[in-house]
Image (tube, rainbow, N blue to C red):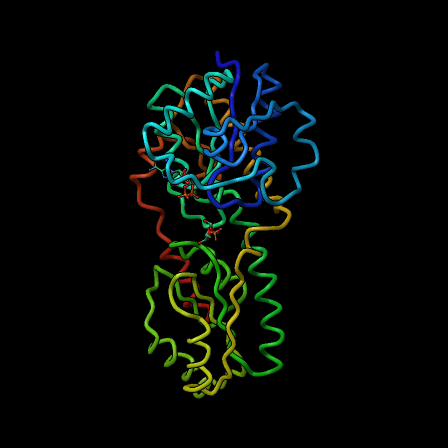
Length: 320
Ligand code: ADP
Ligand code: F6P
């Protein structure tokens, strides 16, 4: 039976990570398992920045964005010598197993540690919703709420001034945040890695909306890392009837108090992680699939294609 576990948050932070830390800590303590918080992701394993956690250490964090433990990226964690040093530090601290809250990069680190004898469980924590093995990640719903609140505001001013607002949202290489925002806000156009990007087509569509449909304003939601939205807005002003403006929502999407949906998800996933470790299982990741909490081996999850969003792109097209 596992006696002491660690918990860390890794990669880009996401609202709801604190709720996951709280759930792991409280549920483990309630089962007689000691808990160590590891600061700043895998960097904390390397530097030995550990914090023994009691139930009060996770009081008043459920509603807080960010992560109490800090998060970081440690590229050198891929090197076997660095992993061995981390394992030595964990053993010295008596940490027998670990819960890692992060994205697919963090999952790979968790798998590497499991292969070297430290059972690890991955929880999907990222606003990008880009992790295989789950329908939704912790943080996505809150980021979506932020996007929707902001785009609704942009629509107000956009309609007063008959403008086209190009709004860039995060998501890394996944279009979910853009697609869900576009549907929720009634955008005129959505551009994501899944739709592909053709500047001429975007301008043509906006000319059509301005000239033929006689729309007075338009909202275009575009995933990050696709194009220079300021340059696109200038072309919109030059080549269509709309005056173009660009807004990059940026890191605001990573902050804020988590929604109840994210708090629930993180609490349910945290519970599952502790249950798996108590069963002696490692190298798994937790997911929610068709509203059921489940788990599968990390290497199986990483090899799986993500569920298709074709039906949602079709819905978007049918709503415009
Ligand atoms: P995310 O977990 O959000 O995908 P990253 O891809 O930046 O974010 O990964 C977070 C951290 O996970 C990295 O900084 C590194 O410490 C660790 N990591 C990423 N890929 C690997 C890998 N292939 N092997 C071991 N550790 C990895
Ligand atoms: O993975 C979360 C995320 O916010 C992505 O959406 C974005 O591309 C990236 O992290 C930004 O990273 P950083 O915090 O290093 O700027």
